[in-house]
Length: 251
Length: 309
View (cartoon, each protein chain N blue to C red):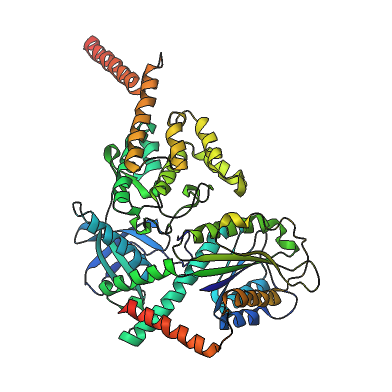
């Protein structure tokens, strides 16, 4: 499972629409979650609407929190997204096999069995989370909290049984043609992330849309199909494999 | 790993009836007794018996917790069951999943110590470690050890609540609370092992006996400076924690052989500290002084009655 987690404090102001970019990410199988940080005052109606819209288009969740709540919110969103996607897949199987709407529609004894399988999947499925950090000028006082949240998330993911990895980007970059900057490549260990944002020069623009697209490119290049053989065949075989696995579990 | 709730659900008024859709039992909610990570816990009655109800919005979440309780009941057959029923009820037109647990009387550790005094730390701490040892030996890590989840009854008898947040050893910790968490203090991973619980037990005593300074430290320290050295500084400079210094140091660094060993060393540390207190010259224990005062008052009043008769 692949996720992008955007951490921002307001509206985008440069380039393509971030909502469209998030929709594109979702179309490529990447869920987009958004944490909006607001410390003093409000995030503004426009910012709040945009944050909610990005998450909606990206198939994810959005939350607006203070920097003190950021760590646990980031974890909760990541966790819920995993659980949510498994639930969706399992519910689909249940509909097809038993004609029931969702897990909750099963009698408790059967539910118990299905939930065991779901939790097993939650714990063991492999997970890649790309964090995209808005480093525009207004975010400066919040970057400590952001760093802490990233460290904390990595620590929790590290404890999972399944393979987990985290990559970190910030935007805008330092030059005109650099939309966003890769701060940390995929890593499993919290200790490898270290201090990330010490050297960032804060700038005013917020090209959220283009930055999301660039992270999607990165995920596609690093986690996607490594060999570009017939993509259709590969996708359909992947699908049938995962179908079989799921059916086995549920039955 | 649940750390906070986001799905809001308004508390239900006392007297609300839950009618189970599958098993047909009826429960009457009496009082909200806790807000969990993903639902609410009520004291309830059914046929005149008291029980606890956990209800939430996500059937899969609640079932996951009920599964753990069922597994624990299965592993510990000798005691009374924790999990009594799992069902759904219609509340305000919405189907709400719930499960029923045995009601566990008692008050949170912190409240107990405030009322009965810190001399109970030894017994309560020993019982807590013995209970955790049972869980660890059965392959579980409690994870969310904190004052609210450790209920103390008469004479320091103890029971844990919120077993739904337990994790199997080797898995990631399902549920924890920030300041009790080993990862938060950069003292290790969030993988469930016995040492994870030892750490939280150490924090429990720090929180119970030195709450103000702990919270102050938590607020003022930069995240990168959060570590066990800072915790040990608090321990060494507190009269009640100082005697437990070597035990706490081991709890924070995970240096016991197993949880029985941790319990044994706890008992020894507490006894040692009481001995050295007893040897301290010129100190009369409070209860003895109290006894003396009562005796004096009593004899005076008897004398008064006799004089003025």
